[in-house]
Length: 96
Image (tube, rainbow, N blue to C red; front, side, top):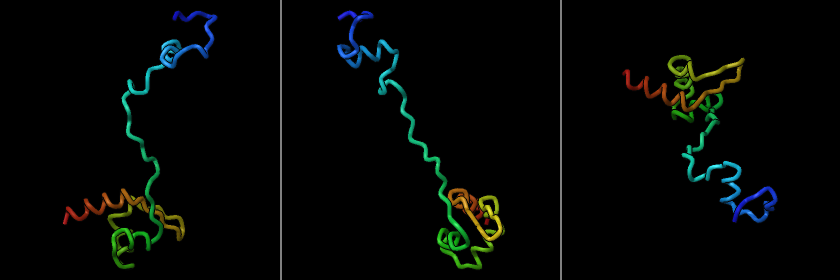
């Protein structure tokens, strides 16, 4: 079947429509793994305590020392990027 300007769109196959519009099949494109843009966050000293299974005093010490780059604090509100905190903890533990 030859596609002309008078060919109804309803008469085209999916392949013909893709070719006509210049759209590649999805299988022809390399697939990228879905990106998880959301950060895993923990809140407060209790979040640090649960993340590392430590006491309140130890969580405070961690927050004030090697976890500082992963911690954001505004007044009394503490927010910790858990992935970065785990990475910093691993680096800290390897230094010992």
